[in-house]
Length: 342
Image 1 (cartoon, rainbow, N blue to C red):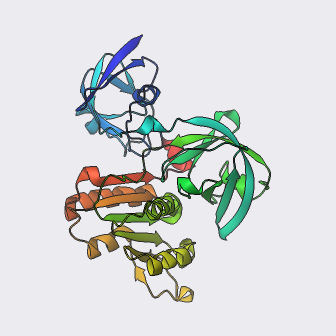
Image 2 (image 1 turned 135 degrees about the vertical axis):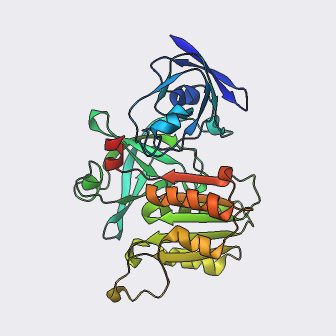
C-alpha cells in the first residue's frame, strides 16, 4: 500500500510505501529531509507528525522518548506511515544535486595520525569522481549487509583521493580490520555521499566549528571548502579531546590560524595528565565556547563528534547563548554500541 507524505511548511509531497521509512521515500523522491545515522541513534532527522499515523522501528529512547512520540515527535529514519501523513521538517535544499552512488575504491594509503587514529586514503577508479559537499560521509559496504560510516576529511576540490580518519574501537567490526589486516591496494566498496551536514555557503554569518575527537574530519573538510571559495566569514574552531594526543592534526590547525586572518583555533583538553605538560584550555569543549561567546544569536554552529558532546552543545547553545535552533548543524558520531541499542 502506498501513502502520501506532505512536508510542511514547503508543501512538497511524495509517495511512501507502507513498509518503507519516510526518510528513504523522501531521498528516493529527491526531497531533502535532514538526516545522519539513519538508524534511530543520532536524532538528526527528528521532526513532527502533524496529522496521520506512523509507527517507529527500533530506536534509542534518548533520541525520541515515549512522551515526545505521544506529542507528535517523529524520527523519519525509522518511521513508517500507517496512513497519509503530514509532517513538519526543515528541508535541505539541493540534496539531490549529488546522486548517491555505490562505488569500488582502492586503499591508496594508510597512515597513523596517532596511536588510535588511522588516515585511510581511497583511490577511485580511473576517470571516476565522487561529487559531494564538504562535511558529508560515506558508508562502507561490508559482509552480511553490515555498513560502517565515515566522514570525508577533505574538501570536494581535493578529491584525487578521498581521505578518512578512522579511530580504533577495539572489537569493532571494521576498525579492527583497519588496524590489523587492511593493506594498501585492498578494495573497499562504499556508498555515498550521505548526510546533510555540510557548509551552508549562502549565509554570511560567522561560524563556530565544534569538534570532538575524529569529529574533526568533516570539520577539516568544511574549513578547506571555506578557504577554497575565498570565504571571509569569521571562523573559530574549538577542538576537544581527552588528552593532547587526541588533537592529532594540531599543527595543521595552528598553521591555519597563523595564515588565515578570519580563522581562530581553540584547542581544549579535558583529562590532561602531568606528563602531558598541557598549557592550553581545559574542561569540556562546548563550555569553552559558552565562556568565549555567551551570545550566539548571530552565529552558525557546525558540531561533530560524540553524541554527548553534540547533544550538550545544542541544548546549552540554544538555551543559554540564544543560538537559533535552525542554525545548529550537527553530525553525531554514533558507534557500533550506539547502533546496537537502536
